Length: 348
Image (cartoon, rainbow, N blue to C red; front, side, top):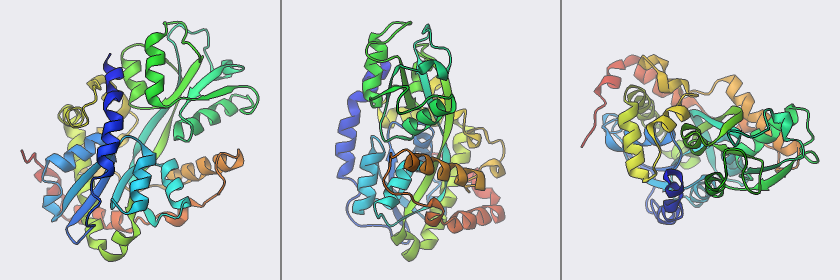
């Protein structure tokens, strides 16, 4: 029942968050953060920002609005209710494609997306999905990556499979009601962590394919134009928070579970974080918040795939919406003041 209860609060969380952070806006020392309450690793970093002095050490204060997934987070960004958001590459592209005056300012994390089947399913390879019904959250990066994997296995995604639109909340009861050999209505599912990680930790699914999606930090252009120094100081605190998380995974995992009221196990959180190099940083310099060229190209390839297959109407060059100047300035500050990393501590 752990994962079933996970979704009981999501609709309420989004409804409450929609009214949060709407007043005011970024200033020289205050910023409004939009985050995704069921999203692990990102969630632990938010908790460090909330519950330690990382922002205070950089002369910053933040307010927080939590959202169940990327679409309402994008709506808040478009309405001007938040100043910085943590999001995956596909919602980031959707935000700027809709005319949002937002910019990618740095790297958030790798998020694992997966295609999975019942533990004793007769399907053993992605190619074995031919003719099968596959549940996936339409519009999410998990859908895109599942389709890319299926095409890479030599199948025609328009004719050889039967996609079914199932968001993560709909997937959980299907797995729960099914057996170790089969699920009612679908033969396989595709989704994004931490829900598949929790199901995997409980032995309820077997992975056919996994890949990593690049997730990013975005800021309002207004912040970058009017309060660029605040952007630098926020990203400095963000990198400091990442290092604290890497050294305190159980503490920050507990904070995340408590704040989001979602029953993820530490094992599931560890599985989710295992794909992110920053999560195992041994030294402050191991934490990277700058996107490299391979990650930027990965985002471009994903957008190209969506456009080529008619899943989005407008092709955009994501490079036009990246400004890593503030993140570079944050790195430079921490290189000159490395002692800041070790001054991060809980505030209550």
